[in-house]
Image (cartoon, rainbow, N blue to C red):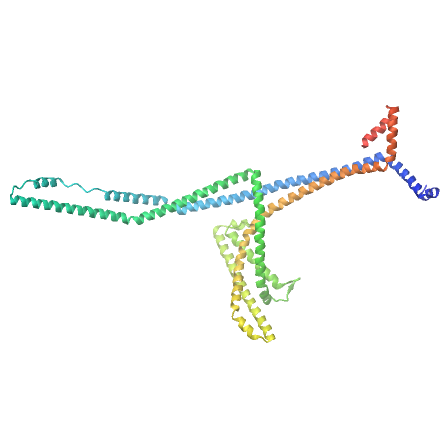
Length: 485
């Protein structure tokens, strides 16, 4: 029986709709158990598939985290080794340059101190006692003359001789003291020199002690890194993030400097290679200016590598000292030549600008203003030539933030990738749970559509369970209902 046949038998649309509702409800009721099983099975399949995918993503995230940890610890270990090596080199240079002469200095100081001590002891000696004959003469001089003029005259001469001898002895003693004090006075510059040397030694020793403290701190950090502790990982991660943003900021400044450099040399390059020649959609003059700037940056990288300031190219750092010094001079010579070329191009640019201004002024009939402006044109010319000469050398230092950016980018990309995988795993688990509970929701909606037959089934089941509690039909219906539930 088709829909048109039913409509002819039952012309009322409402009644026809009720008939169709009961027919569909009956069909859905009899298909309830397999349909429910298929819906729940399909939702479980989706849930399990998404859960397996989430587990795979989580495992990949764990492997990436382990890899990031290894890379981070390796980078931190290498940086710590470089810092420790540099501190040991500084200590070695201090010891070799400043303290190598310490034994000889100590011997010289000891000799001078001994000599000064001897002179000081001699300068502090008391006057010597008079000889024994002085006592005899003094006894003779104390004899009473008894009015004898000859004896009195002899005694007077003896007294004068004694006084004269005493005066000569005192003068000699004072002269000797003056000489000793003069020696001590002449030793004052030596004392000051000794004091300065000892102060330098004390400063060098203090510097060595300070560097030893730094080395001890670096060694503690190195032990933490080698051990692979969580604290070391957190510290290195935060340091890598800060280095990434700082180096990116410095590179942005370098890009601005490169753009200024490009503006200085692009126009005169058009006069050299032709302003109407194109390679694709780009002018040959612009490409030439960019190539010159890139060559300057490359020479700067090689120069920094040769100086062992950066370590982007291990081959250059592994060269012997003789070849490395040659490479330093070669790269510096290239940089100097390119900087001179840029200064010449900047001068050429200023000439072209003056020619254009003169031409436009002549067309306007205002040639006097051009002559007045040309008196001060040397200022802009010198400024442009100076910028053209200095900017290539300034771009040399791009190698330092570039190395930091490259090394920190590995860590930052690893952290971002791990966070992305963690988010993907969360989304997969969330969608899987939604699919799982969506199947239960669909089953509940299915039961809501056929609520009438289910209500009848429940009523009949209750009555049959009351009248025939052990009937196999009732047991089968209840078991099926519990299985669906």
